[in-house]
Image (cartoon, rainbow, N blue to C red):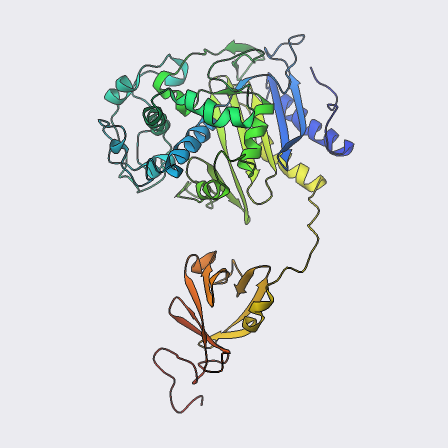
Length: 457
């Protein structure tokens, strides 16, 4: 059992001791048989640690970062990436109905995008015995037993394990092989994740329940979940899961494009909890969080005997993973570890270098939308009008001579055109039909509706 900070970390000694203390405290507080964790930065595992034993007993086999645990619903993120690879290959559209690819299901009218984002209204669980603790059957058996939708598709967020069983079947049919064969070949092998499997292999932790009122343990069952396996079957190690966190942080090794990963992080359905602020949503297969303006992506996981977590800052790529072998008791240690690491090991800002576009200098300065005042700046290769994140402030990318397109905010995807006067100087900006002029309601510019001949008075 680990009692001192691990060697070989690439964080400072003080940081390593603090993270070790946080992890050890959580192991003791939650009465976790074992827990292992890792921090990822720049695509590498920069810190890792493990506390406890694989069977939860003193003198047992010490857990380490090569010990397998079940990742539970983090499995869904692998299935989602496999689906997006099919989309990027032109083999499906996210607006396709599920029945276009897997006929016969009661919820066949739900779209693939709705299934990925838990917006299809499907039932959360199966109608049979507790699927996580009993052997699973075939897709046809599962599909034939389902009630289908609890809510109108697209109405609201409703988490569904059944929906990802369905997506796993879609992946399998598209490739003509088992869904995990696809995940292993197209995701795990390119990323070097050799210790991620559907059943325990090599050194693995025993799934355990800890009695709520006594320090005693009960082994949890482990089995093949059959058609429900894509919802939460996979086993992994802290080292392998850290590689997946690096993937989530942007190091995709061409498994998917950065643009596709960013698309998966766009919130589709908000997890609306009564009495609480909106901080959690679901994108395409990933949970996403907006915590005081900082965006995170990842997923939690639970199966009988196991809990897991993965979270990354989407902008920096810094991330954390945790794995433990207990059915309940794990607190919010993953975000606590990441927050502590970021506080003690902040990223050094990149040096500023001149990289602006001199040809856009004629556009900088003050512009007016009616009487409202906006400032245009050139930041790198982008034209910035107003303050992005405030009101209608947006960045714009040049797409042609005097043609720009919005990158964020209200004007995302909207065209901006520079209109010039007879002498070639910029007269006004046409932004999605709005006019921005150098003076408020410039009578010399083409202002829709005209400018009162009497002028200001």
